[in-house]
Length: 347
Image (cartoon, rainbow, N blue to C red; front, side, top):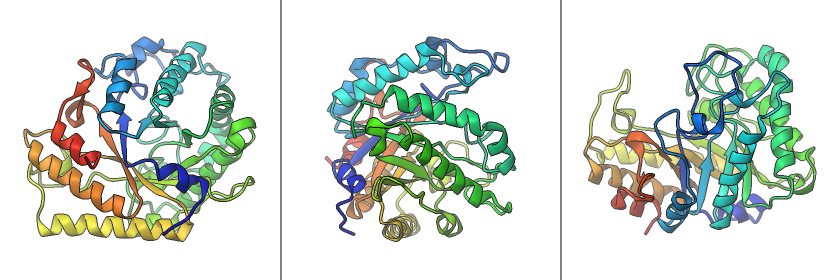
């Protein structure tokens, strides 16, 4: 598909993306509900060091064109939904570092949704927490209202139904409610004015899933300021037995590259290309990766195949980086696994 929409134009400059995982999205699980967590305590809660300007520069120098910045907000809100100013300042600081390296930045609402999140694909959740959701995105939109088109807002991460089904849902109305949250997000951001009127926005499928049922149930949000400013997003960690160290219900392995493995990715990319064509919008794989099992050549082979196949169809892939997934050494501010990074950046 060859389109010249604003979203396609932006993503044409992105070959390789990197997630700053388990950092601004981390949660303190040892504190009472409703406690506001200081930025430094939150950022390091899951074992990563504080983000530095040098790390962001190293990510750029490694060949990445974009950084997805997962942010969890619920431990930084007062009872009225006002974001703690030092937290918003810290988020803005890192956003600006990314933009100063001329990389695209995707800023989201992360573990507020997903497993155990307060954001769910239910009507009751929207009734209870719609105002909080509105407040978060209203404040983000105001803070960044003068920041240009290299900053993309992403509605939320891996929203689930009230029973927390992954991949797809059979709960009546859940897909429709998920679509309604995406539309609500677009409306809120556009109401922020200035650069938000034309900002590129990213919305996910239910749970970030890629099943036929989930892709079919997705509805692209309407946009009062004209079509062509939406990026569609999915996630993929298949085959799970290879990508994860622990994968309930899946046989674990540290090798990859069978005919079935290749065919699985071929089918995935083909279905995403059709999904992109249907909605006339670019698609990204906003998260993918494999954990280290002392099998770096296998991980590099997997990364190379999915990245190249996706690139053939204009689909950018964003590696999930943290812990055993890490391809960057955050303390030393350098590449940790050169062969995997080379595969990811199509070097």
